[in-house]
Amino acid sequence: MAENKPTYRETKMKNIFRITALAATLSASAAFAQEKVMISDPSWNGARAIGHVLAAIINGPMGSEAEIVTGMNQQPVIFAGMDKGDGSIDVHPDMWMPNWKSAWDEYVEGNQTIAANAGYPGTSLLYVPSYMSDKISSIDDLKKPEIAAMFDTDGNGKGEYWAGDITWASTKRWQIKFKSYGLDELWEPQIVSADTFKAGLAAAYAASQPQLFYYWTPEALHVQYDLTAIDEPERYDGCEDVDLDAENWLEVSHFDCVIANNSVHVAYSKSLETRNPAVAKMLGNVQFTGLEIASWIQEMFDNKRDPQEVAEEWIADNQSIVDGWINN
Image (cartoon, rainbow, N blue to C red; front, side, top):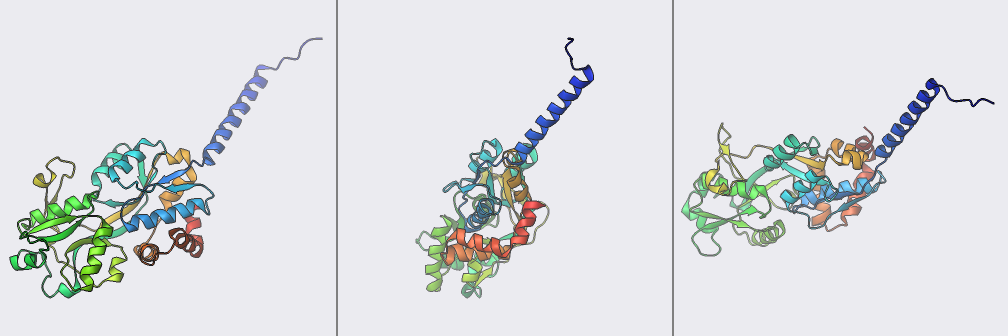
């Protein structure tokens, strides 16, 4: 009996079906890929609060897995890890622009290995407690030796101001600004952690003592204390020319105007688009408000509530918004 061999057309169709089935399988595998998402832990409360909410969304309604990498707060290391795309670090919950413009230019615009959401607006200003506002209202007031002397706690002839944490790009910017305003002969920066600064502010405020410091919005500090922002010169072309990556960054940089309003983003490794595409889509869609972030900060860090509990409560109260981030 003659063997019934498949025709060329039948063989071709079978191969097409196999390829189509394989492609569908691979596509489905990619769609349901759910590698663990590693979230960095920058050293300010706004970033930490956002990180907890993102983790709760991923671990909760998304049914995936996320971990906050405690102590992962060196921002150049965070950006390099996201650029690498190996899953060692996947998310920066609170990337302030233009503070990290160099990282944005390199990784978002250049390598295109990091993506970001639309962001929320923030501000970066210089503050005093409002009980000092009758003596200090502008940068010109800081040029008076008798004013600087009020802030000289160590007797070295210079007043102190808090410039930020040593790991922050903004800390360099404020040192550049004080030099550019001609204040570096009268003032010197205190470069300590946010927690150390806050402890000092609490003690000084209770005793109505002078304090001068950089701070930002949104943040719960503005709910805790009555603060007044110092007036700075308006922006003009060329007023901000900084190179934070230069070895002699202080000498070669100039910045003698108010900081432009910030745009603050959730940044994430684009490798998540294949390693956990559902989470990548959510991170690209997520959108918080300053009031929401300030409320999380107050509950998690000022009221000492469990961050996961606060995050899960907010998600339950805003489920339709969260569902939109996940499904749109």
